Image (cartoon, rainbow, N blue to C red; front, side):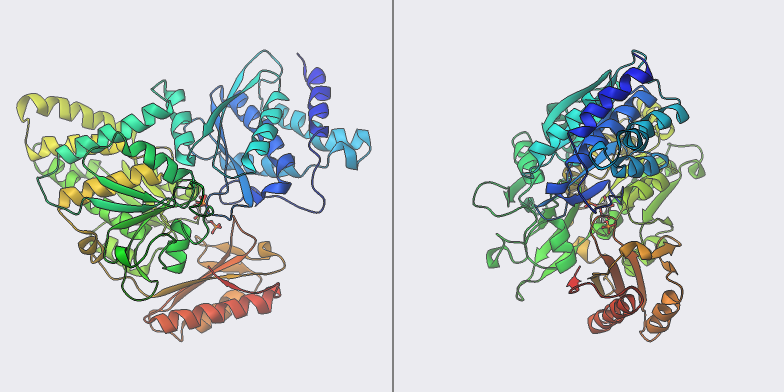
Length: 568
Ligand code: G16
């Protein structure tokens, strides 16, 4: 098969998925996202992209259909690289060009060839992709529970089939992190099925609980499944879990409500409100909320006053994990463990949305805190530079990464101690760390594994959710969304803390912020919704609300108001 033979095959397939009129798609914070009804051509072309990525790397890649926290009518597509992480950023410009390239129905044949199929051929040459030469490509497909997922899955398969030698393997309905985990494990040659995933989580959780002191704790946990795939999978996991009493609500079953509507991690975090199916009976309980595709996790305590909750967000999860990991490393290094304490680097990664109180707390612990732009792809990269890197966005998206070097050192040390100092705190700490690395998803943030680690750490500490929540007190904050004509007119720098375009906007935000004690404010274009996001923090809730409102007005003034503004 030569490039010339591949042209007409591609062209035939491309014709079946015409571009929608007047829309431009961008590979944003987490892939392409839009109204599900206009995404077929995008998903079809993402299938081609995934096939090329697999050919280029000689490994299995993943393609996930989800719009995560977005409303049920939206959908999206993202590619998982062979290591289970997000597709490398260098391929994003090609991804953008490919999904927006005019198709044959809108152009003369010859131009169409240039714009779409030749774009592929040209990229294949530039990237030196073994194309049409007998190599095979494998792409694992996953999707969440959105109704538009079925038809879009077919479009993805067609995109993959249009590349000779590429094979689509449909893994069914999964959480996003499950698909990333499978891709990573397949390429490492380790167990990679859904039941392997479930068994690994249950086993590591059990081991961590067995390694914890015999503490009494609140074992009951009520979970809001966002009426999405996460709730469904947690029900499945529950069947093989021991040591935890979980009750799942908003599982997505008929009659339980719509995906992400009045429920889910995004709703609970942004609105600081009780999700649907929760009420007065739950006041004071330990509760958690997942998002629509099971990659975000927040905890909350329903409060007696109206619909409010005490939010225990991603920053608090990060803090809990950081405390635990640091303690284990200290045991390991102080006793007969590692020779050189400095050799183990521990770092945490946050975004500008991290509450100022959390950053101050982490720094007080002596931890190195790195700031990254919004999006797991940025945080993950930073966290991977440490032996142990913990990253979390305030919205509950995050994980803990362990370097291969550190894990082999840990394993060797554990093996040694098991004969000389078995049962010592140092030995147990090594075992705990190894088990955490098996439990927590090494590919991407994962609400299910994150939830089990939170529960294991609370058990280890003997803490209630209230004790955990009181580690520090959040500064009052407010998030708003500004609807503007073109959100991409806002360009930011310094991990999104400064606006560089349009000129003059940052100066006015600074002037406004200076009026408020402990004031902090930034604006950035969303990568998943058609809005500019505004975040403000100050010493009182009224002040944070007022600062956020002023920033929205400034955004309107510079970019033009395009509809009603909403809470975040
Ligand atoms: C995605 C990303 C997250 C990001 C969130 C919001 O989450 O994976 O890293 O924080 O979008 O992004 P933005 O503010 O740019 O809209 P999810 O859970 O929706 O996939």
